Length: 292
Image (tube, rainbow, N blue to C red; front, side):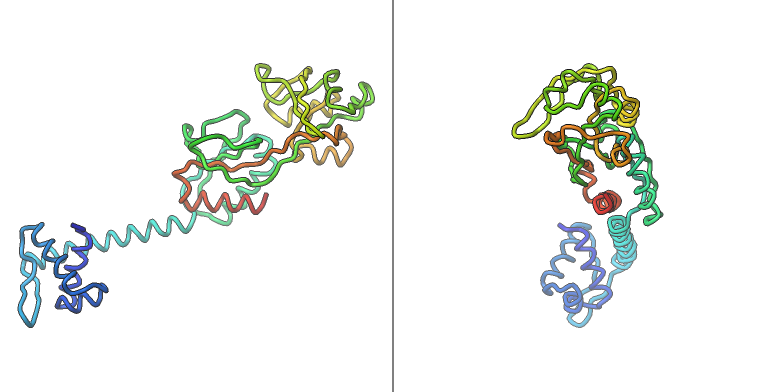
């Protein structure tokens, strides 16, 4: 038995004064409405209505039950409306994780703009360069820059492509020479993103893919540190263009091996499957995709 539908039918019969009028209100047949009320009476083991050929009216028990039904149905309607508003208008807390440099340079201003547009959203923005498990650590959205999105449990929305640039300072290139082929990197100081324990090789793509083992004086899991080291003439660096764009324009760094670009990577917004209907998550992902 659909108890809520039976309660609705019962209240409509009381208010309309009969089954036929209630059936018209509910867009059901008279027999369907009658069956709903009879099922309710059988379930409650109580007669709720006096039925005559001319009139239907509630019993004393039916009148008391009718008053409670009104309260229950009104509360249910209010709960449904509240949920609908929650789904339509972003509100509540939003935990976001992103890489440090991208978060500082690009994401943070956009988050502030988003919050100004949706003032009922409260944001916790966590910036770091370590790999995190978004589900385990309770993030609603994680921004990640990678060649491909991670595996199961997360929905990945591509926000924008993120070209990588191989570059070095003019002084370094003057001192050590400019590479003309990926194999030349074996004889250069290469500033590596990551940790010593990770694979220290770079892949570049021309007519074919070239994977070259690299070595150098510095590895770090922060792009800004590597950028500063490259500007200080310590070696060649491979970084996203958003980190070194201004340096390339102003001559602090020079691009190299332009005919052998690194494989493409993307900026992704990742969020757990159970967040995909949340208005605050959906709106933020749409907002970031449009802005970035």
